Amino acid sequence: EAGVTQSPTHLIKTRGQQATLRCSPISGHTSVYWYQQALGLGLQFLLWYDEGEERNRGNFPPRFSGRQFPNYSSELNVNALELEDSALYLCASSPPLGNTGELFFGEGSRLTVL
Amino acid sequence: DQQVKQNSPSLSVQEGRISILNCDYTNSMFDYFLWYKKYPAEGPTFLISISSIKDKNEDGRFTVFLNKSAKHLSLHIVPSQPGDSAVYFCAASPNYGGSQGNLIFGKGTKLSVKP
Image (tube, rainbow over all chains, first blue to last red; front, top):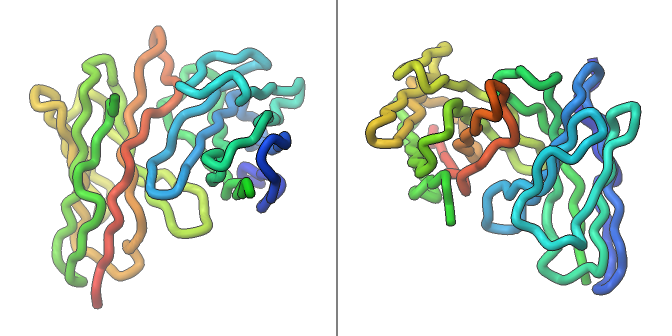
């Protein structure tokens, strides 16, 4: 069974541009979560989608946005990129609500903003 | 405002000895706790978890202890092996009407197990 897959693996952008990151959850999982791991920091919660709806949002500015598609895959968009947006962006998925809390992570997308 | 704190950024242990990783939390609404392990260039992988109704959970060489009154949990690895060298994240999950939601992570502790 395929795990959580993310694309692209690496992405280089310049300040002010937009970045789009994609995630495919494990088959049967309906929830998708996005986390940011900046250098020297832990995993910061960004967004949580379930059944196409945004369930919760972390303490990030509105230029971080996303969506979940009918096939449960998800997209994270970061507009007006800033240097400090350089980080590893991790996507995770989990089974439908009622699960024990375990998240299954992908390997991440490394975003570098120059 | 950090709700989950791992105050030790790093820990070095000799192979065969016990590794103890600590984690403190501030939110009493957390009712499920997890430990994840992360190798460089890989996503975090689930290691072990504990519900707030328990004070201990064991899985092979890994044991997690929960002290609710102190809002403290710890991960014990016995015996430690060089392959255990990784960054360990403590995470907590709030209860959303009986279902778990997004995890709140600590900053991680880098464990180095020396042969």
